[in-house]
Structures are given as C-alpha cells and as structure tokens.
Length: 225
Image (cartoon, rainbow, N blue to C red; front, side):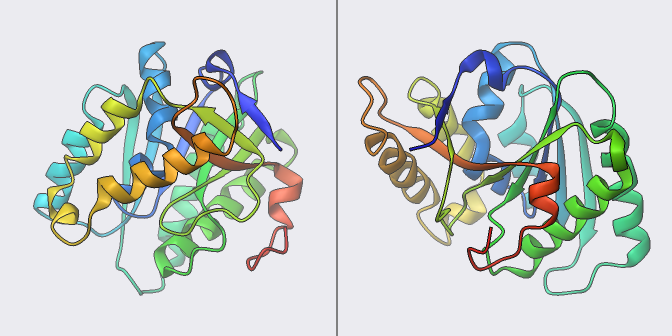
C-alpha cells in the first residue's frame, strides 16, 4: 500500500497540471485542485489539445474559482504531431515555473499507459520541460488517472469532503456528458480507490503514481516503471 497524502502536503509548493483535453484535469486531480483552492493556493493548468467553442466555455466554468494562476492552451490537433516549436516553447515555460522555489513542485501528467495520442504528447512535453530544468529541477511527478486506471499507484488523496464539488465541476462539461456518463465513471473510480484504502471515513479518493524526476525520465509505457 502506498502513502495517503495529507491535506497540508497537497497545498504546499507549486502545482502544474498538464491536461491533454479540457476535463482531464478535473477527472484525474480535481480533488487536489479543490483542496489547493480552499487553502488559497493557485495552480497552473496547461491544456494541450485544440478546442473551440463550447468546450472552452465549459473549461472556464469547470475551473471557475479554482485560482488557476495561469491557463495555457497549446492548440494541438488530436492525432497530429505537434510542431517542435510549440513543444519547445511550452516546455520552456513549464521549466521556468518548476525550476524556482525551495519546496518541490508537483507536475501532474496523465497515466503514461494511456493510449490516446494527445495523452502521449503530454509526456513528451513533461520530459522536455524537466530536461530543460536540468539540475535545477525540484519536482515530483504525479501520474493521474483518467479512463485508463493506474496499474501501480503509490499515493492516495482522501477527497471525501471534496467529492460533491468535484461532481459539480465535472457537470460543467456538458458536451462530454452527452457522449458518456462522465460523472458516474469518475465517481465510481474514486469510490473504488476510497474503498480499497480500508481507512475509516474515506469514501472517495484520487490515486496517483508519484515519481522523482530522474525516475520519471527513465519511465516507459506498458507498466515498465
């Protein structure tokens, strides 16, 4: 069994979330973001994919009040190879954020075994950013869950108190709710993670795979890390 992250710990330091699509940030680490909001801490969120019209409006609604310190959109087309200059510029911006501060920053990325192309590009971006940091990198990388659950999580966050708000924020993504039961899927996963912690009072939890920078840079897909 891994480590249950304390509320105080998740509120410390800088947090940067790479979200392949609008909604991935809320699906995988919405509870973490809500806890940071409650403590008055901001979060940088990077949306990788190209999204137009209603999807961007939904994203703004879902993130309203979460004290997003910065919202960066990369406009990468699903299934397309992102231009090198786009990745390089975004990676440099992330590296500048991660390389400062005495308390290790948290960089959230989707499950490395997720098969969606944009989710894979998220890892390319994360690796470039961490390599740009070089020896200045003071970062813990957290892989978060989406529709592909983590095979080997080692960190859990009790989000029982935050689940109602997370549910409401997921509801902002109405276009996705029409395609599939988004809220029910996420709530079921968080309920499973909470139940299998076997801790009194924990009904819902988010699960992550936390790695030091060096370990993450050597990590490969297909459960080889």
